[in-house]
Image 1 (cartoon, one colour):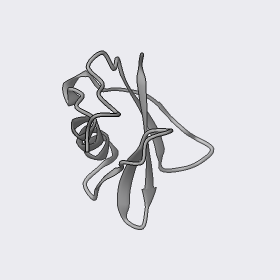
Image 2 (cartoon, rainbow, N blue to C red):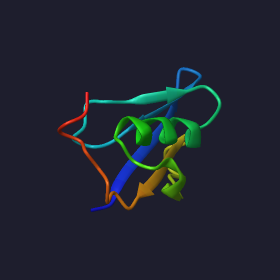
Image 3 (cartoon, helix red, strand yellow):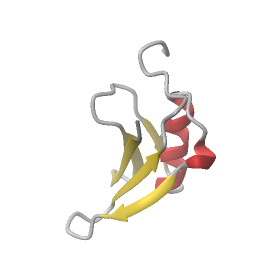
Image 4 (cartoon, rainbow, N blue to C red):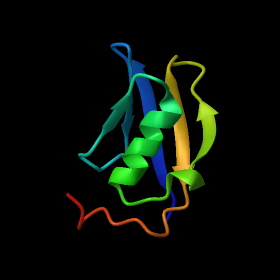
Length: 77
């Protein structure tokens, strides 16, 4: 099942989140770096992330999708 990682720019930092997941990741360098950090936390290969869209109505919001085949949400801390 694909995993959608949303990043938003807030307070001079990019914050990455996944709906239904409490863990987040942040980075001051860029949205991709924040999304990759969250992918690693979720035990996903960050090299497989694909940027799919930028929300033109809400500036600073970007969506990345991972195929999610190795996802281990419940067991990770």
